Image 1 (cartoon, one colour):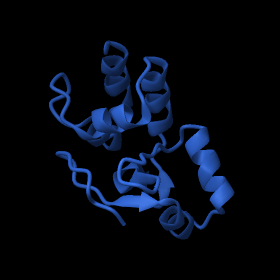
Image 2: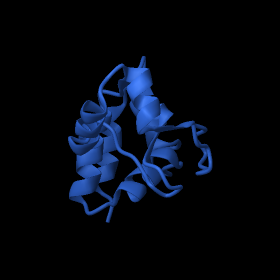
Image 3: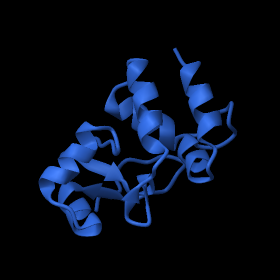
Length: 116
């Protein structure tokens, strides 16, 4: 697990092999989860890695996909999506991923739509 990227939200970074082991899915299935925006990863540190905080009970956070799609529709890169989710958003008062994990997806997406 890689922890080189820093943000206010502390998280481990899971590579595809980590996700295969954790989720009990095939490599192909993990890539489909990434391709279909159920998860999002970064190659900033070399191997593709996904923030562990994007998983709940060894499953992708259910509200993550729609939020990723909103941000990508606005032109955000994968790294920009991850950065926005993990860093404090002043209009929310905390990191958007924290709000998503608290069940506040409507607020997060409303604010995401106002970006750019």
